[in-house]
Image (cartoon, rainbow, N blue to C red; front, side):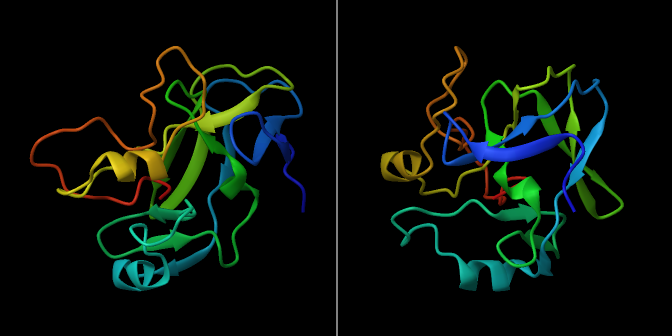
Length: 160
């Protein structure tokens, strides 16, 4: 089933992206982020961000017990790219994840949200390079990882 709000095609940000097929009003739930629901331990076993030369950003943390793996049974939501100045946001509602417009979006505009990848205590410049951001916004922080902060643990992004 195709999504009524966007279609997937080549993106200037990264690979494929989701592009609005019509105007989308602020507050619209554009799509639910779908995939196999797994534990954090299973997610860590499937994807090793430290070893993969090009880590796939397909995991989305729902809560302390559950991660959605869009690489297994996922839908078009997995193609919505990261931006440091996004027009959408991820909203968790009753253990479901929705991508929602945070401002009015014009037809043809690429849909984006901030992946908000948090860091492990030992994340370094190499990890920043692995999760490099290509959004091109004037507020771009250069990485999909959050800015360095003391005492922060890792969460999978709300789409890791």
